[in-house]
Amino acid sequence: MNVPIGAVTLALGTVSLFLAARLTARFGVRKVLLTGMFALGTGLALLSRAPPLRPARSLEPNGAESTAEPVA
Image (tube, rainbow, N blue to C red; front, top):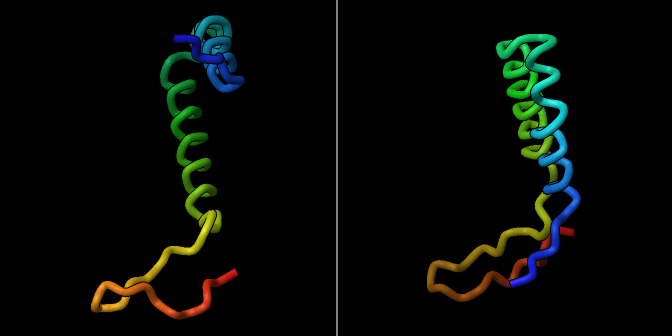
């Protein structure tokens, strides 16, 4: 099975192989770990504020779809 390698996969592999060891040796495990956790938390906070790709459909009590107009 051929699976194409994406840009994110290559970026993560490059960071894991080359950059992570150098950063850990220079700054220490704690600083690198805390910086990564802060970056992850910031990214998740920004992502949570993004609008949904499409509005959620609401269902009427009897299971029929709502006749309300979708929000653009």
